[in-house]
Length: 82
Image 1 (cartoon, rainbow, N blue to C red):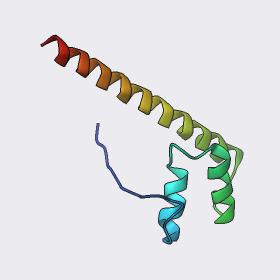
Image 2 (image 1 turned 180 degrees about the vertical axis):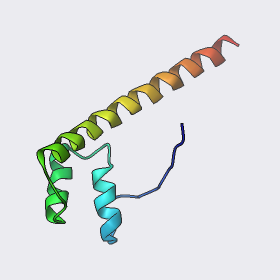
Image 3 (image 1 turned 30 degrees about the vertical axis):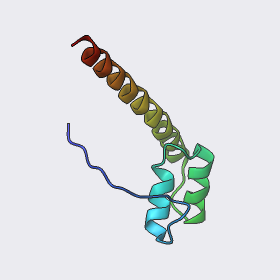
């Protein structure tokens, strides 16, 4: 697996329009409604498919966070046993 990390900062505080949109859409702290609103604000294509995918991204962020927490817990348990 290949991963890329981009530090977008706080979408609410940036004046850069692109970073604001990306920061909102990719945020795991923003609601699906917030993401859809920013897409409307910037006239991004918004079909039912896109709305569904935005919702899926939100769920995916939760899943990734849960998996990372579980991996961290397992690592701590392994280190404790040593």
